[in-house]
Length: 284
Image 1: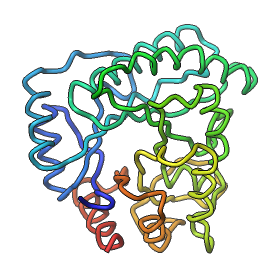
Image 2: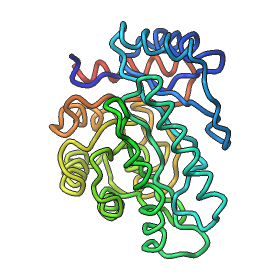
Image 3: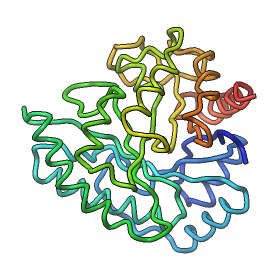
Image 4: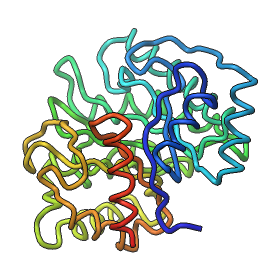
């Protein structure tokens, strides 16, 4: 068992198994992440039972842990009743489809407080909308919900490591709740991963905030912007303001033991394959 399987977000237009698994093989990936719906829309497609079965079987045979990324439009802190309603429908769909394809986790962005509402009001709505979804995860193979913080744009509900505290508290530290740490986002939000000890300090704070064992996935992305810029602009590994050293540190920290890394970097297949190969080398 690898300490940190490394892979990428793969395209699935044309079939989860046919296209997604093929792309993962091109990257020499050891894990993968997929969308199960249009990431910029509200549609909730049923999927193909044949492709689901082929995908599950292919992942099992290759030892590839799979993850689902929920659509970007989801925002449980929105003041819009329509957005809130659709967010619940979309999230329920992603969780159900995650179970159907054998996913190990479903990633969702933590959202923002819109319409001038306070963080406290928005988090109260997060509790109202998301706790019932978590309570529906009663099957043994239901994937956990992995919260991904943002780079801190606008009225973000969760961008710094300590922000996971109120978010987890709103959701009663539900056992089906975890974290997806995006290195670009957390760096842009103000945790300087490139500073001496920056990675360890950030991971230590995250564990102190949410508890051990909650880190379920890492989005390994370098950042085109400096720490504190609050801009979500991914760069290839080693080509941004984080640099290669911090990723080596990250791959040795106790909190990342057994946690897969997914790249979401620029460059298409060749760039993705190069990033996967580089992270494997840094893993040692």
